[in-house]
Amino acid sequence: MPIGKKRKKAVLPTPQNNLQRAEFRFSDTTKHQAFYRQWNRCAYCGANLIYKMDHAHHVIPVQSGKLNDQHDVFLKSLDNCVILCEDCHLEIGHSGNFTKGPVAMPVTFPYSHGQEKEAHKTWSQQLNAQWKRKFPNLLAIETP
Image 1 (cartoon, rainbow, N blue to C red):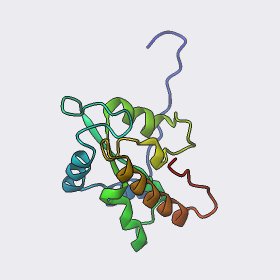
Image 2: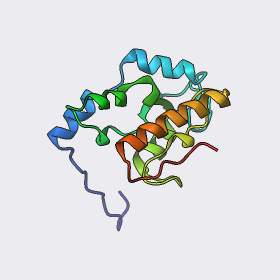
Image 3: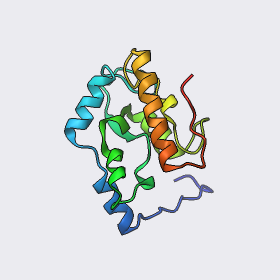
Image 4: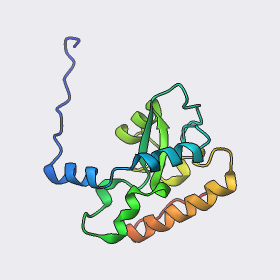
């Protein structure tokens, strides 16, 4: 580490947070279905994922879920899953570095259905409805 650089402190997840992440993890089947739905492309940048490490990403984050709420089973569904290349997952999932707010909304993933714009629009509207259900006081960003 270069002299003068401060090391960031690691934030250790709470046991409840670990349990929640495990509870809402995507199945292998869901990840494969999302991969093919996107035509093997990163949902964010559109890069071909055949030769890259890919990551399953929750559009509506697992931290918003409650383990005992039957409606939150949606969090691990195909509709809430997008596949991202490693670089995009680091940018979207960990840095909070995007212009659409503190969480990337469905409109942020234009390749969620490959090149099928109408399917993406329908998917985005369905997810926005889930956002409104979970966060009625927040305005969801609609697909243009």
